[in-house]
Figure (cartoon, rainbow, N blue to C red):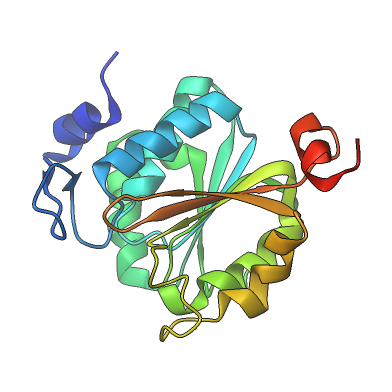
Length: 214
């Protein structure tokens, strides 16, 4: 079975190039989309957790969307909602998704992520808009993530987690959720950084151990 990278080459004529921050060993399609390794990680995660509903903020050139939607197609079920503010990005992304045979699995909303009103809960939320609103998105969308579900923030590195940085104050917006064990956090040190947050579920024994509720 061809990989998503192979399908992108066949259907779109795109090949990865060295990632601009490292010049290798990581690769990318463009400086705005996720690294190819992160795309493959998202594909594997979707294959592993079998989500019914995924939400992505920040469609840009549909790189991460193609990896996640391709995994949904492989699963045989599930849908991806994407929120994108810029019409030029939507047009480019829809064209790519269509050529990849993935557009029926994706609904695109042309609006600000902070104005978007979800119609229900999501198993996975991928936040990939501008850094200055990532934590506000997290706060807004948190209650729409299923218990045990995941929130991923791309482009989250040590600078974006510094409350003295020019970005939002993560301590003020989501710090209590981390401190109170409402979410557990795993950071992957890719060139642009990717951080996973898993929402607390009372069915998870390891979480009950951590919180002393077992």
